[in-house]
Length: 360
Ligand SMILES: NC(=O)c1ccc[n+]([C@@H]2O[C@H](COP(=O)([O-])OP(=O)(O)OC[C@H]3O[C@@H](n4cnc5c(N)ncnc54)[C@H](O)[C@@H]3O)[C@@H](O)[C@H]2O)c1
Image (tube, rainbow, N blue to C red; front, side, top):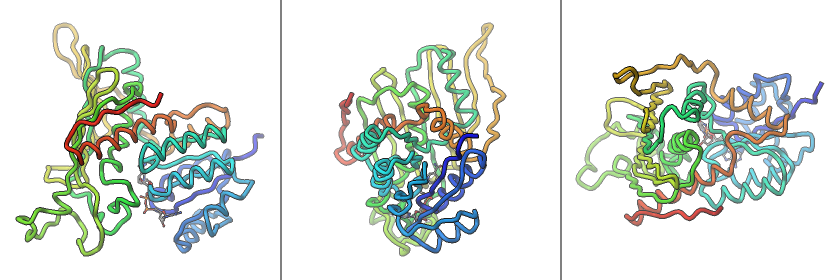
């Protein structure tokens, strides 16, 4: 029997425990949960106890120095993704890294460089690529059913999803930004994935913090919108971002992402418009639009998401390590993703379109 992969988790918060540990635990024939680390030792200890993990490390370097560990997940605040990933690769570990891969494209590229030197696998935890609906959508596009795709729209709008004051998510030095980098990476990534990941060439973006930091006229309003009491802490990121990206293939992508806004309800969506059909992924459900026998038709494929958060993604990464395959969500694509995010922030700041030069 093949030796089990020994696994370590760095960052034992919501995503680390409920996505990474929960999904690696589903594959006990392939993976042995070996060690955890969190800067909060109480949290690390509690997580280790709940999941019967034998070793609680007192630093991530201690965990990475353990030669018996083959594979780590990084589920820390975004600011630590690149330093830990690079250290892990130097230590010879395979790396499953949460989204966004890093704070910006420069850090993302440094991870790619470290991966190339280390010859280990790196996969970005883009779970939306791995749902049954997304995988069917990709096949539908690849088979050419939409004809020539010319435009895409994607977004994730929350109504009252902020609740971020005082958390690392709302502190730009720790997160890199607000809903654009937090939610946007998921849906930009999926959109580009369905389109075959063409390089971005130009970006116009606008970021707002009107709810977190209302103008003088609105300051008196007692708003429920941002969830937490402002006094709870810092909030120096956007709460809404919108804009337009042009891709090297000529396809345009319109987007909007928010943690909170005055809309009817939360909604995530991705739409592709092609010369022969359209595709919509709306809150996880897939529908296609085209025509047949002289009439417009709607098609609802019978695909259901049956697996848990991260399960398909984790299975895939284990197989990539075992079979020496390249992961479906490689860091090279995440560099392009981060170029878009960087350019949107730059465009919002300058008020101008930002052009992106490909590194290839
Ligand atoms: N893929 C998804 O759907 C999804 C969902 C939620 C979060 N995430 C990502 O997961 C990551 C963690 O988010 P979360 O929601 O779990 O946040 P969280 O605040 O719940 O957990 C973060 C954990 O990291 C620990 N930590 C902080 N600094 C650390 C360091 N230097 N070394 C080790 N541990 C450290 C904290 O103590 C905390 O336990 C983020 O990158 C986030 O974007 C992804």
